[in-house]
Length: 467
Image 1 (cartoon, rainbow, N blue to C red):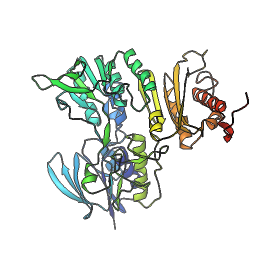
Image 2: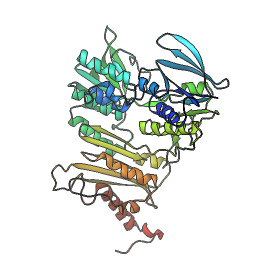
Image 3: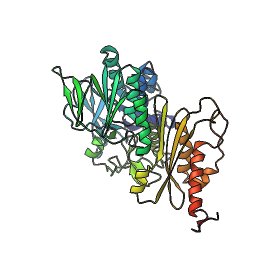
Image 4: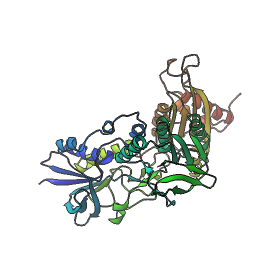
């Protein structure tokens, strides 16, 4: 008898689950239906700032698979269909066809929720005015680019200094707009420690972005036509022809919570290591779920496409009788602001301290290549590690060309619970065009190990080392 697998959400996690399940089971064995409320599937949301900034010329370049391609592969993708409710007892979902305005009830044997996250939109007066954009879906990027090209605005205000905020600031600077960025915290990039975020703040100013830190937005002023005309903080009023919100996202748990599924302390849907929810036969994956942080052991909700694709794959395998698990995350992420690269993994100094760990940090300023080789650029590496064990807890890197992807080495070390002493002995590649003879990652570890030696931490005796 043919079973029915219904997937709610047709982007990274949902289509990964559907495609994996289809590869493992034929249509005669498993019918797969995907409901997606937008017009697009399998698109690269992380590429939206580069599309708005015209680094990527066509929106279709961001689409890995169209709905038509998925249908040709045996997956019944229904775009512009929104799932309104789940009936877990009767094994049905209620769906609205947004084009025709009709509602239907669709049965399932297995269900995967991959509904993603919702942009944070605090109740600030005027936030729903015309000209205030959130950037999450491909349609959002298409709409913003159309406004930039057709209306030719002159002044933009970015609200929020996280990944989307700084990437959208770069995109609009490239488009020739005068750009301001407003951030409520004392430094941009709240996933970094403030000392590293300060480097990003300096880079924003260097590329011509007027930056106002520690200034929460109080309201958005509108004109007689209902369009935004200014962003108001406690300190100033910033004229704006358009506003882009970069205030972060939260897991979209509305369907899950209404159906009685467990929602965790991180505000994401609770799943086990096989992405199973609290209801039998119901899985969840992607930005809507919480998962385990591999350093802290705590539940977290971190919205990244890397996690979503892997979790979707786990669902597709387990729905079809396989045996796959998702172990957890480190929160590894990279971003760029023009030629400045920003990377982080694991815990920040603040996060590690809040866990009650005895925390030490090491920060080094170095060069991306051998100092004598043309093109060598500054790089700063910060390591967060535990006393007295020396275990690496997290890392942050800010620098120029070649800086960001160095974080992958440190992410692999975190995954394997390595100490700074062990990392120091890693056999990393070296040639003058790529790094100094002591790569900045190893240079930071060398400083950390030196501190441990001076404190007598090596060897586990607690006794001071000989001079």
